Image (cartoon, rainbow, N blue to C red; front, side, top):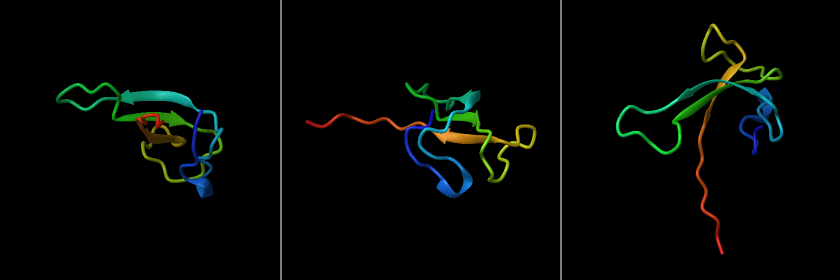
Length: 68
């Protein structure tokens, strides 16, 4: 589930439910979080990033630190 609006005009909005297709990590050094998570969203209307998965979109990971 998306936790923030990413691209409202193309349907990537807060609360959208998707299915993870791929988890991509950078090569060197191994990170704690993946670089990109490729997800399929049924309501997505933007360009295809991977032709074999037309509704698949890249979601970059965001790490947040709580403030006091």
